Amino acid sequence: MSPLVQHLIANLVQVAFLVVFAPLVSGVLARIEEMIQGKHGPSILQPYRDIAKFFAKDEVVSEEASWVFRFAPFIAFVMPVFVVLLIPALTAYPLFFAFMGDMVAAGFFLALGGFFVALAAMDTGNAYGPIGASRTRMVGFLSEPVFIMVFFSVSYVANSTIPYAVNAAWAQSWATMLEPAHLLVLVAFLMLVIAENDRIPVDSPSGKVEIAMIGHSKNLEYSGRGAALMKWAGTMKLMVLIIIFVNVLVTPWGLAATTHWGDIFLSLPKVLGKILLFLLGLAVIEASLAKLRLFRISEFLASAFVICLFAMSVRLVNLA
Amino acid sequence: MNPHVLEVARALDGFVAAIFVLAGLGIIMARQMRGTLYLFILHSLMLTASAVVLGVTLDSIHLGLVAVITFFTKVLAVPLVLVWTTGSSAYQRREVEQVLSIPFSILIAAGLALVAWVVTNPLINAIPDHPFAAINLTTGMMAVFFGAFTVAVRREGVAQLMGLFVMESGAFFASISIVNDLTIIAEIAAAVDVPIAALVIGLLIRNVHKLTGGTRVGSMAELRERH
Image 1: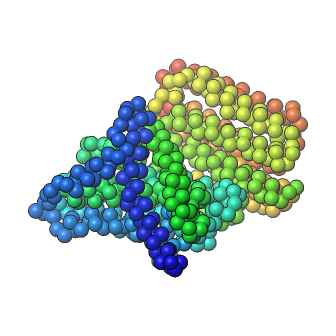
Image 2: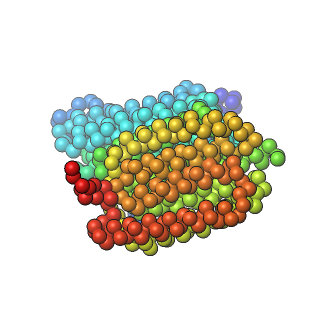
Image 3: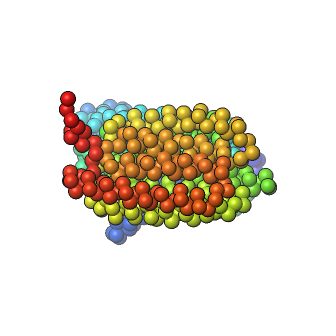
């Protein structure tokens, strides 16, 4: 098999890894959070059951809805798939699509999905959809500068915005990993992951009151296949951001270094293990913090921005 | 000194310094008293960690003693003294009032960090033979500014006290990189005055709490004489 074909197949394996395991990641997170609260919690396979149930149901679409509403779930589903083609999910070496786009492109793909979902929420006659969409845009506008600053800080360190190059730059030595700029970027990116995925303290994923929802009210109008795709897309977006966090920024080790299939499949449990550790941390954060009031979210993201600014300054003045 | 060891030690000290700055920033931003106290403990723990890193790398017994003394005074004694003197009611889950909004405070903090770097840069260039001065001097100066800013913008007695301690920790963080052979008397004196200050100001805050029913010193502006 030629290396080009093998890289293409490995890329597709990464996509399959994301599509198959994303609901499991969300299921495990929900279970850990329930366990921290002293409850038994649903099965870790519950998201799979929910998605299968939605696919089996009929779809009801509002008469007010246009093509945007029907189209948005597909865009939301496809965008994380595009992102995983660009990032080191299982292999440390660049794959077929690695140089088709950098971290800015990854951010663009995720933002594009979010944009269409927000449009779709405003497309129906549901009163809560536009409220959720406008709130999500507010969070989006605030998190955008943080995204850009994280990319700038990371590219300063690695001299590249290609995720594989960043991964290689961090993995060089422990000294590189311990740089203050690195820690500051990590903290800012963690805050961004929380905000972008509508987790506590920005939004409550288990909240049932529509008027208090931010990200989750956008999906209220979907049913059947649309609801299944939206749920699946949500889990994939979370997993993609976690993969970027753990594989590119925090622990750039444990990925396949050779083109042997055995090596690639051996990296699968290692990456899942790293994701599990991240989920434990995220669950602790969510269990120990309260949801912020809507107008306090700006403070949360402003602090993430300033932390990025610190990271940039530390790099610029070459403090350490 | 082995250059590789020095490189790793500098990276480790930089990592500790980053958490030190984050904790200082958190003390400016934290809205709840209990959160402020936990962040102060983290801040002090990072001061201890930096002293350990510098002590081991520079093979200085004095810095080791500074680490031990800092741990027992700032990480353990000061928080206990503060909770004991001011009473647990001050740490209930209520919000601390600020003169400025949090985003504006964060922006000013970023500016202060830049000023700290500008102020310390000539000093760092003047002492090239101190390998940790670039990190500790700048970070320590940032903490001094952050502490002063906390004292200025907080309308809560205990939070202002934390600001004072952040300033003191900042001064210590900077000084351990330049002077690492202080006499033990000076080290003990510098460390003991902190719990004493906590005790005295804590008792004062306790009396304010008894007299006015709270420690929100911002509302005491109404007591000023009107001309």
